[in-house]
Image (cartoon, rainbow, N blue to C red; front, side, top):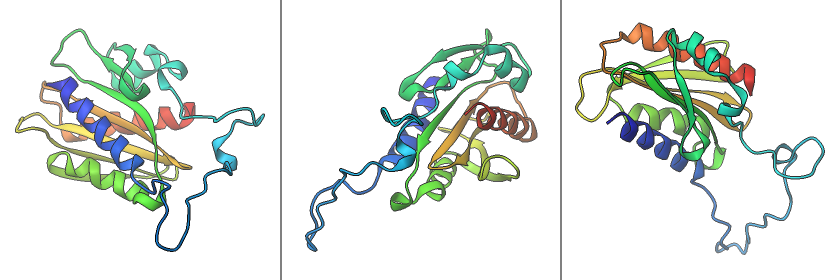
Length: 190
């Protein structure tokens, strides 16, 4: 169930970030020319696209464990998300990652809305001092009774994401605090 929830949130995030102009012509004759590369899409040497941070390459299990407050194992998951879990499958697990956002598809606001829309009885928590803007939303998923969390921090044209799943009765305050620590870690590493 946890993996399905995490995969679902990753898909929601990827879809929210991927919506936009498909480059097809419109009635005004605009061809959606994409031949020019924006400066933030290339590495400092100008060789190739810089891409999104791959947090499993940038973070250690010890760093994530310190933020979570328990020993975790890291592995790379779908869309280069960095997944973590504990030996007890009911204990807190989750993922951190990054997705591009575009103002043409609602950008950061669409991502925030999508995170809240994926959780039942959701409660939004804006976070100050992390990236340009940051949030975490808590709620239940798929009729479950355990609180889950989804959040993100806007950094340039990307949202650094965190998704938390648990079945051990962690409180909303605990999930928000852990999300805040993880988002701070992502912004510092990215």
